[in-house]
Length: 425
Image (tube, rainbow, N blue to C red; front, side, top):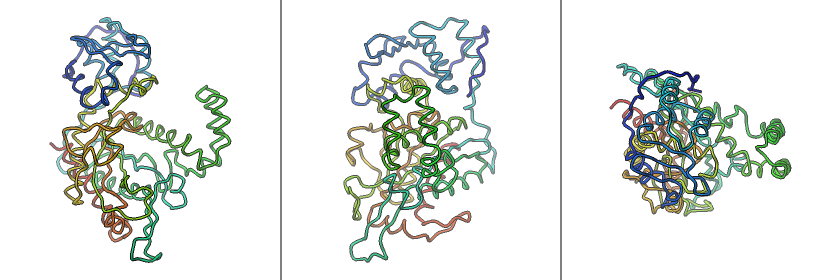
């Protein structure tokens, strides 16, 4: 938590270059998916209004308050944001309230001074290795694996890829690379096959499931009906009905507690048109996601409103586009893979917004919404591509004492190059 205590002082509000026009640009280009929020947000000359489900004005941000709100939302947690959201409503801050809030902000986003041979010295970078399974058996619960026989080969040459294993190996190498340059790094999950709770899903299901569901029911986070239904589910069904999103929120909480200057979310993609992935695909591309692309139903929950306001008021989404552009460019250059276009996948067309940078798209995913830092969510290549699936099965390279497919090393190298370009510019 970055907010300390509310004390009343009379001091001027600092300015960070945030204006109504800046917010309107972010709203139009990143946040408002196909006009879905046109009846939820109103921009006037000197005021931004957020409306509730009844169409009533629920929260107002006045032009001269935007620098303060930007700094506050960037340097606070959701609990503190909710207090201010409810206290403020549509009225203006008094001078006393504004000064009090300003004095309470502990700005932890400032970058340390560049330090020559260790240019990332003091910079905090969080890495999220996507998914968690490292074995085919566990990956079948997540549905994040490939297992097929390539045409013209036999069963001994079958393709077996587990995305959670690829992402973790990539994260370990990237962590070593940037720590050499002075960065402070955390991984959202500490070991192969481990979740954000520092245990396997099998262990969580066997020993923690009941306690967690009971505690959520006790604080009314689960209805009696939902609680009873979840208690009866098998390990596989409970993962999709509850654990997947619950664990992603835990990752975001762990990352936000670290207060990173940057978050790197590592994934490997597949060709959606190749479903159910029983054969190799000829297609391949590379892409990165940032936050945004909200629809009106996303704003029904109060926490989502707060995340929306942070992305509206702050420059994080612009900075996320910068690092994502650098990353997808490094992917394309090093891996020799074309950058994706909006019409390359149905999920991009229906749920994504293109940006001015090819291969960078807004997606309102849990991590792109909940994480309070600039971020890049990388989908470096298609695992099921006819060439990639073979290369990813070859453990033919060693870096930092870690044996990996050379392709995995090149993905990590691409993230590293983008990070260096982003901070040393």
